[in-house]
Image (cartoon, rainbow, N blue to C red; front, side, top):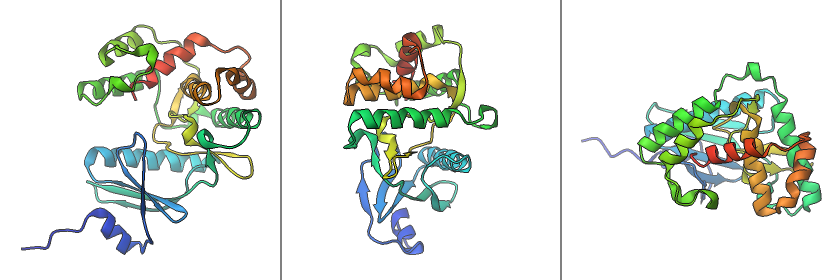
Length: 256
């Protein structure tokens, strides 16, 4: 009888000669995440989470090739059924936890999104358009993995199927850019040099710019106050905030 295989973490610690690993909260990620010195290790030990991790690795590496500050890949493991990614930490502090005053922090965030959205969209191979996202949302709702208890207060009591139907009935015309796709303040790392890096890039791709703008503005309103949305929009270069478009993409984000 063959010996029981070691868990993936133990095998990789030995194979990659890793030091102490510290488990950390991965937010909404299905992967297990560990801090390893100045690096992060993500492990996906089933096929669904491995697929998502492969997507994150591919999109992060593509963004890096475009000159965007994202985690640099150190090692990758993939046996078809499971996957692992060792990456260098982006230096700095998450914007959600930054000690910078809002008058300094908010313009940095706005300019970082403007730089990302300035990338040539026709070169981006990843589809995060409305129709692509609605299809993923429909699949996840059918699988029962969309939890309405996480919805914003404005959607309290709304079933995922109801929200999906509403979004399907009224999609706005799209102004496509290269978007991050999960542009929360926690996924923006403010470096000591004042530059903003991006993490958790598994949903990056061609999308309407308000997919990012709406999510970031919601985070700014929650953490810093609604009065900082206008300075954020100004730093980004948005002279007239499109409230209806922002609301649509905030609601679409509820399903992810």
